[in-house]
Length: 538
Image (cartoon, rainbow, N blue to C red):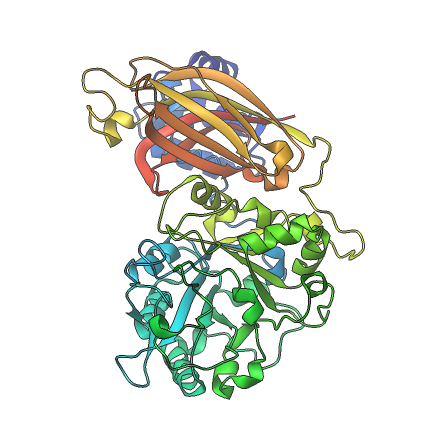
């Protein structure tokens, strides 16, 4: 069991009398030191009751009780409930967005099934993408697969039922289903009937016309929205036989040019068009005109690959993109060369207001961890309010956050200690003959000016390491910054062994000393492993 470090002992002495802390003392500590301004006496009584020790049952806390409180689940680093304004239009939020949500592995040969959809929804993902193709083996049937590849198909109705059954387990806020549509009009009509049969009254259907502005997440609680772009040419060929399939080129590489295929919705079956809550756009002309020619009384969605977005930013269209996303939705998806289902830097999209930064959720990696960190914010509901400067009503005074700025605040992070590895890992997991040698990497992900990397010293041969080290991070755009914390077992010969990680939105960090749970590479939280970390802002 971990022992209280010196800082904790001093705090206990400051807020207690005769080595005993009362409920009123703990309340004062939480208000004054932890800055929990909304805490009340009932909250503190619940904490003391939860500790369930001899002292706490009498309404008193010892030093060990106080320390256990600081390390318990009732002292998290982020607010646990939705706390942001959810009454603004959808375009004012970042949405937790999946890419090819049905794939279990790579983009060329993996299996398609409903399990990745279920897993994503239960983790809080709010945008699910399905690729719709005619089923060559069954007449008048629709399958979901990655067209032009060797990925196996899955029945559309199974995907729709999985979405319905799992949509609101993690969050009550709306789920958007984006169809990448390669269907004939008669198959579109069948899909329309299938969608209505599965979703029934939870389907949001505003009618055929584009909305002037999107509804709010609050008004769409427990609703499902369809977003799609009907194809220009209806083809009955199998995906693997379709030489003009926009998804692949001759090398089997997924194409990046999906967005130029946006077409007139009048070519789609009427009952299908009537399902569309978020209309895709038809793009005409040069890239320079795309964002400037948007009709201001229409709210639509545009898709761009990560490469197309980077090219647009390089050509000085960053301000145009931010202005576009104040009313419309921008979806960014992985470029075609990511056949291994890897991901890209999401900040390229976020710092320009892109709401739907679409990710392959089935893997691991730095950027997926960053995506998971962003959406731990706002109670994990899958919607995070964009910073005010990204949806300022002044169309002529648009701020692009990646441009150089002055430091707004400095985040101070103190890594005290960690515990729980001996409970979540085998005794021989890190070293066969001795306890692990843990160290911590502390990093900031965000706009270019805010990126920083630091690390603690290595604590040798300890299952419960104590570092007591402070790090400072000056931030120019704290609204978009994420704090990345990773723990490793030091190895001077081989690669350091991974021992847990987390990623947290800086703007939501609760001040004071907090218990920070760690997660595995996939983002699943360990049962026992956590760090004790202090957070301050100057």
